Length: 405
Image (cartoon, rainbow, N blue to C red; front, side):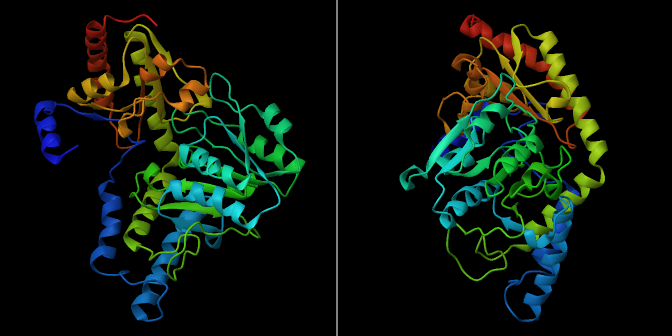
């Protein structure tokens, strides 16, 4: 889309008097504390390459180690076992593709049907190398079937990759039980968990879990974008998926960027120093908003589990008789920002693979609305949404004729 047409679209769209932002899954900003932690590294210090042997490089390397250790401590791991990457997508790709580069004998990878696309697409890219991809189904609430996982494990299995929490419907997976099943079968089968949506929401101790690889993300805890982490257990060899210059992070060869690391570390400090308080706060807002919408809008279905089986920040509802693009646009014009179960961000109106995996029909998936809450959301935003969204749904249904599904 040309910039002129985007400008015209924004002018027609206008700006609501009140706004509620819940699209944290797809985009986020940082608060003043995180930004202030980053500022000195833009202006005063840590601007060198930590891999270069001169004073500025050494000073940068010292700061790099201090900030990185703060992140590692949040997972109860040593900082030497935590690789910093540019995104959770990169971390997931390194885990799947990097493992196969050094292991040529085993030819099977097991994933669930609700994994993030960066895991699913990376695994499927290995078809040409003779790697077989086995997919485990999930329940109607998105829980991985552990009995089928057990059945699929064999001497040809190289890796199992299962999320800790599903990023779209908030399902908290029985990840510890899954790891135990895999390791009881064969200690040499690698286990990777994409813990991006779980980081800061549930207690994660990668040593206690006995996981081989674990992905975390700065953006998911209100840190800056373009920095993430990948835990790699002691003794495991893993190869980078691309080549680059000399750097501290050998799995992600490029010049390390101290402002991002400082922001990530500050976000970790805030999230984990107030871990219980933040999660109780978001859970309170989540329940008020999720059940408030369910009781005030007819023909609404909750996608994913309820109660303690669901991440405290996650809401995913299907408004039957609504279409995703209309839902996000009409909500946006009323100052409510969230995302739909159809991939509108890529301008491709396809139903979410996660919602279809839990048994939703395509038309139900298209009418879904994903909202996430953070410590930066307010009760006023929730109240405004409870007041406004029912009117939005009613208007959309009046235009479409309230199609029965």
